[in-house]
Length: 117
Image 1 (tube, rainbow, N blue to C red):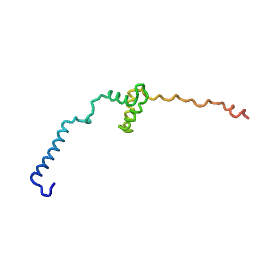
Image 2 (image 1 turned 60 degrees about the vertical axis):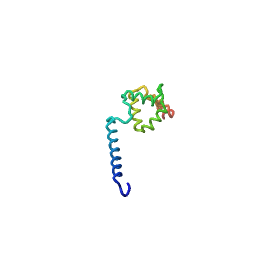
Image 3 (image 1 turned 135 degrees about the horizontal axis):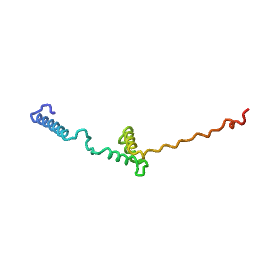
Image 4 (image 1 turned 30 degrees about the horizontal axis):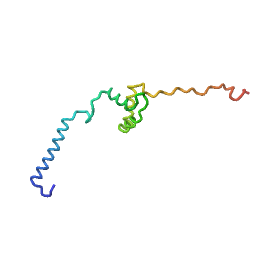
């Protein structure tokens, strides 16, 4: 503001404040409640299908490019939450557990060191 404000300076200041406040009120009035701007209205099934396609290829193998992109977008905790939801919805995509390994064959104590004395 100039050191000696005139009546026009005061009018300009009032008009700028009014425009700023009015535009904010109009934007808030038009915004949907509880929805992020530009968010698409998707069902839970559609969200799971999207993330399934991002995390896995059609044949069930890991989609490394999609996983990397989602990890960057969601962060580690968000990625974990999404991954667990996808695996819960599509259990066939779960990584199979390794087969249980049998320990070494048991050897009778008398054959280890020769005959007992």
